Amino acid sequence: MPDTQINPTAAALLGLLHEGPMTGGQLMAAAERRLGPYWSMTRSQVYRELPVLADMGFVRLGKPGPRSSQPYAITASGKRAFSRWLAEAPGRDALRNPVALRVAFGEQHSGSQLKELYTGASEYHAEAMAMAKEQAKEAKKNGDAYGSAALEFAVAYHKAALSWLKTAPAS
View 1 (tube, rainbow, N blue to C red):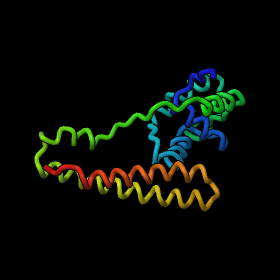
View 2: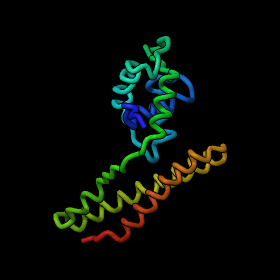
View 3: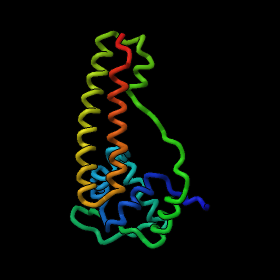
């Protein structure tokens, strides 16, 4: 299988552009709404990738809009590159959890620091899980079985994090 030469962020942008032309800001909003519970994307990544995708012929620029906003549309070549990317092996997860990293150095924390860490992380994961559950429910209601399934991953992740936080050593 040939390598598409696009990274996951670029692929996500191409996937989102299947919905229609969007500006960088609209792509950020769509990424946050559709992918945010399980895939992070920064504004700088989006604005770095769009010109590269244009240079590769995978997107084309539309007419500038208000405040010089530039809409992008996926090209036929971009659709083919996205299809090739979908067919590639996804690779390994890149697990980077800032709470687990701090817990690894728990002996250097005070008991109150760990308690604060766990409380903050628990609040975050409970809130994120509730949001992902709601989004999954909405996606399912709208007939988006695949979007719902991806969001259920986010629900399970936050549920697992909450379970782990309950068992992490406190001192």
